[in-house]
Length: 176
Ligand code: IMP
Ligand code: MG
Image (cartoon, rainbow, N blue to C red; front, side, top):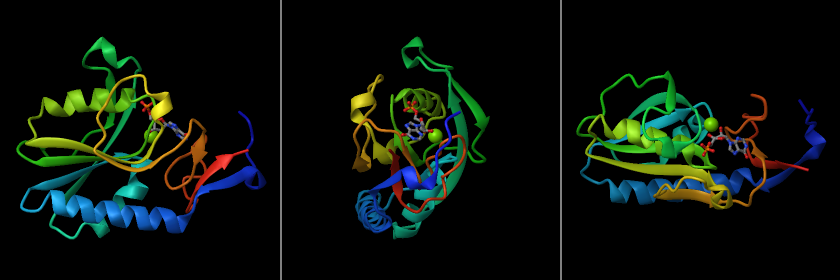
């Protein structure tokens, strides 16, 4: 695997920009979910970084749970295509679920996950992602809250990894 050194990483979205955007998303979400039973589902590992920041900026009561999945790929091959690495602790039935992801790329993982979660009868499901790469979409998924749309480039930081490293960068970087 190719080695990435820090001098090859260029800042695409700064720490400050991310902070501001997440705060704005939090306000918007708080308004939309007023009086509802908001339940955040953080998709590990990358989603943990935005989920924690976002949760703190949503000024209404909420609960949070964590899930780790890996996709087998082709979402058009119907259900059962998502492998659960770590399942949720709590039921989602009747709750207003907001899935929190780091990035939506092909959309396959999310499309599969949506199918799976629908079978557990939540009251509603929406999606929030820090980053969206619309040019890469293979499976159409409706994303309700997007931090930033980015071009088709491989990015790291703020939860996103390269070979499990660089998740801890406080900004979004692109490898040159
Ligand atoms: P997809 O939408 O099913 O293709 O999968 C999205 C997943 O691919 C994300 O949760 C990331 O783990 C990974 N991914 C996609 N693009 C990037 C990137 O630019 N950097 C790091 N991970 C990425
Ligand atoms: Mg991921």
